[in-house]
Image 1: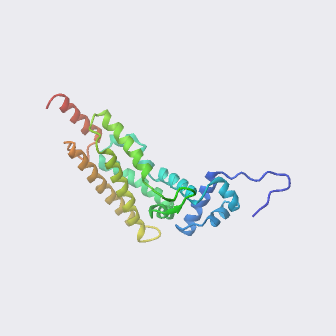
Image 2: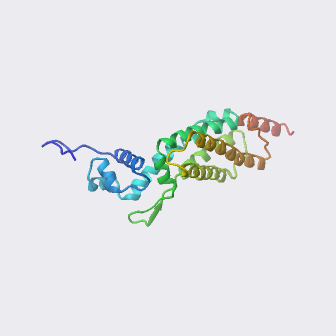
Image 3: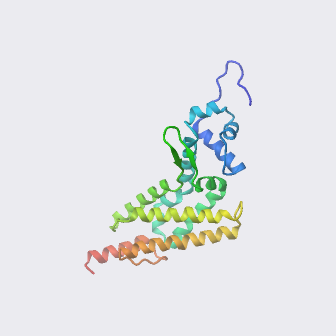
Length: 232
């Protein structure tokens, strides 16, 4: 390890720098990183690492937050998806998601395996890759439903079901090889699209809304709202 020259301050290493180093270690060595390897990759000592993170649970939670936000960003940040036909919108979401996962497949394996780690003073922590993504998805869906308006009861369950489905089938997609083939990825996107639409369609039917997967959701819901307002 390079030492600072006399009189110079040690290089500042931030939490983000350490998370970056941890992701590099997992990418390279697989989904069971050691704190020694992470500290070495960040070019710091373990005591300096632990000045930034209270324990392994703290660091791994930060990794989960970073990767969850990145991997699921397409599912809850783009309202223009609602203006597209659902099947095309879902395919776009899952294509972007798959590309993000393929950049760090070992990190997803690390998080998706439900890692359980000891946390100082608070028992154990099980990393949950999808909880924050489900909350964002639910928030977006609720804002759309209230604007139409549409009954929002059950949206939290739908969001958890969608994210749970995605996490589960991603694990299946990544299980056969270190790097899925183009054909395996295309099949994953196809399956994710149709399975997710099935959940959404089932939810809408319980709201007495029959949606066409090739017609924009906003168009369908606006027509339903107009019909309800006119008493048809």
